[in-house]
Length: 402
Ligand SMILES: Cc1cc2nc3c(=O)[nH]c(=O)nc-3n(C[C@H](O)[C@H](O)[C@H](O)COP(=O)(O)OP(=O)(O)OC[C@H]3O[C@@H](n4cnc5c(N)ncnc54)[C@H](O)[C@@H]3O)c2cc1C
Image 1 (cartoon, rainbow, N blue to C red):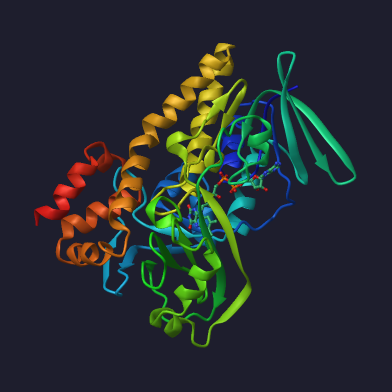
Image 2: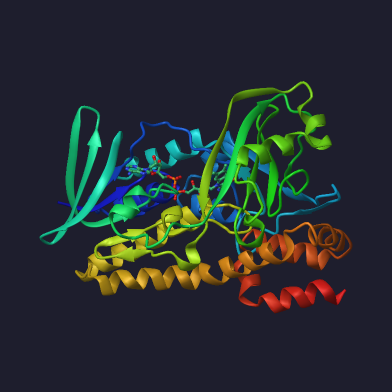
């Protein structure tokens, strides 16, 4: 019987494995893929993500392979831009880093193994069920079946929901955002700016241009097809991507560029506000707990952070010898304390302003009002201290005050 079995070796699962294994717990990390593997993503690591990676002592290695961006630029639907440096407050790095997931996830997984976690690839877990004093994990692997047991299971399966459904953890289908991206080489005009744009993309939604070393870039678009907008919006991220790369800015940047590999799309779960995060002998981390920023679609940061929070909480419970549901429930409290307000403010900011009526005046106002521009950037990038003092009413007042 392992202490902990972690299902899913993305950023959430590997971070949890690292923090648990380095303290001497018996940890088995499982993934259905063989590594290194790709994960459809924009590859953007926010300052939040970078501070966990720094804590894991991986930041210096990643700085050598990633592309550092010091500023963020946001373009309105009409193409008007505002730009600013990343705030870098509270000891967080004042920049972002773009690292392809092919490299990032393998680096994280190897790091967890180097600190004592065991890893098994090509195991698709299909069932997690209680047994006397623990949980049994059953799966399929090449040529047969797989089975193991643990005191506690950490589910870190990302946006994939079949396992959560089998475990009875999803009472309803989560609403998802949809996004698609492709890699390009020899892209013109790349700078040290993280470029986000509302031009050419159905709203609520946005496109991104994230530069990579040697003139390459990860370019993509995401849409949030729910609420009012969801009634008429096409649920096709590929269409949003195609329309984004037809905009004059992208036509210019991609003239002479070469697409490398296919355009790939994948859903994003952003339902943390109502998602379960634990059950008997089970904790959920990262996107399996709906932890993707509802305004920006970033989820690597929250996967890393929740992986760390889950591991630290489990270490505390194992030390006390009590992994009962009451102790595990405290994890939900820790996550809500940390993320609930942020997710609420980000959802409301998206619902209020990311629409065809308000996005242009909002960006135009932010271009004239540095305080407003900074506020929006801090909200989007999850600057905790800002959020402690902010309510949706205050945002509206700040917007209309000037
Ligand atoms: C197009 C797109 C662009 C994005 N851009 C960004 C961005 O720029 N920055 C950012 O921060 N976030 C971005 N995101 C979100 C980000 O990719 C995810 O939120 C993040 O990967 C979640 O991490 P995770 O560890 O929770 O899950 P994942 O990274 O999805 O990892 C889950 C792992 O679980 C494994 N797995 C799943 N089911 C099973 C099973 N039954 N058995 C065994 N293994 C299983 C999978 O193989 C996978 O390795 C983007 C998402 C999309 C779709």
